[in-house]
Image (cartoon, rainbow, N blue to C red; front, side, top):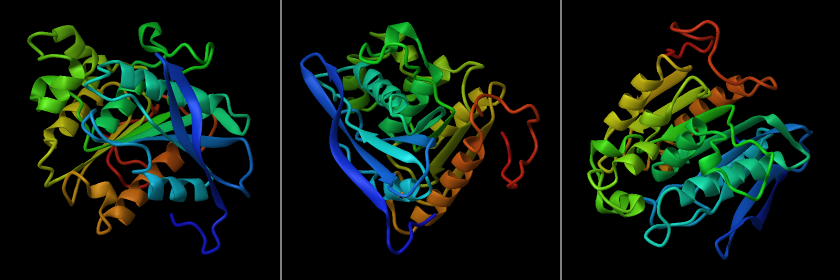
Amino acid sequence: MNPPEESTVTVRRDIPFHEVDGETLLLDVYEDATGTAPKPAAVLVRGGGFTVGDKGEFARHAIDLAADGYLVVEPQYRLAPEWTFPAPLVDVKAAIQWCRTQEQVDPQRVAAVGHSAGANLAVLAAATADDPALEPEQYPGASSALSAVVGYSGVYDFRMGLDDRRETYLGGSPEDLPAACDLASPVEQADMSMPPTLLLHGEDDGVVDPEQSAVLAETLDPLTTVEHHVVPGGHGFPFDGAHYEATDDLTADFLGRRLSAPGDHGRDIADGGPDETGFSRR
């Protein structure tokens, strides 16, 4: 999935999309100027342990997805310790809803891809879609539901051990804040409304235990179509040149199949065996 030599992908940077508590959050938009509408949208959510970083980490992925016909956005989100859960989740949902306000986007084909902390936020957005307690106020009537979601090296169960940054994000320990711990954990929030999900985790990840993805895959198994792969590399495998193409191909194939038709959302009728690409459905 590579853009042509003469790329027609355009980038619009620093577009305001969420004004909240005195802050204006920005996103970058990647789009192929020659593409036809309506087109699917992809929201790319970077990592950073909930405490550091800014948009731009997913730039290469964004260009490639845009060249494939997606409108791609990479948003900012609020960071701990100044902002704790659920503030970043609300920001990601605002980015999803912003996509649905764009006339060139098919509102039935919106996906999210996240890495590390961003994978938590992307998958949790899918698991808590349209939950009134977790929705932004800026786009009334716009849904935060997703038609597909991809998680790279994600944190999906805060009960499986916290480093200092994750505890800072929650505002305390699981013992102190058990309700927040559960609400921030996709393994606790997932239900039958979950969209098809792709989980990739580096086999040598020393930052987030690969068991996090394994546990989520097991949780999602009776709920939706889930594809789970342990792949070569460490925590940053999606951005490692040695593993980028394989990661990109898996992601493009998954999104292409799940967003190929308007309204393709939720569990497949036939499940359990290999699908048309030969990947196992877990």
